[in-house]
Length: 125
Figure (cartoon, rainbow, N blue to C red):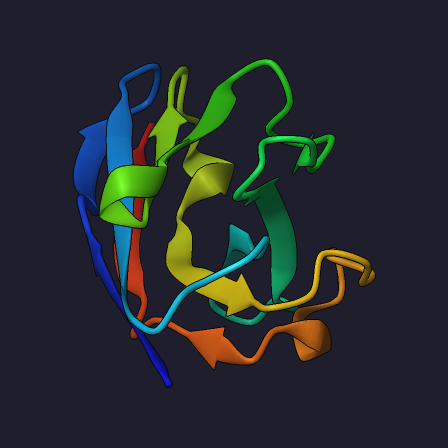
């Protein structure tokens, strides 16, 4: 069993920055994936970013590439999402995800076993 605890959401003006954190507790071993999805009101859930424990896998949605950066601290089983140059369209609930297997379609939310409770990010124009 893995528990995910997110922090770092909030409100910011367009152009600003926020950093999200997600700490995984419980049994974690071998290589695994952690990442972020988001869902805005009235919209489909969408993939944001992913990183593997080994660092061999790192990917971003086109909509955030060049503005967001994902990183991890393996000693703390924590993943971070640094979000810069935020836009109003980035407003959403951001959820941390965890999957044991790295050989999955990581852009498919259905492939992740564990989800965090979600943290709200609001960007005003």
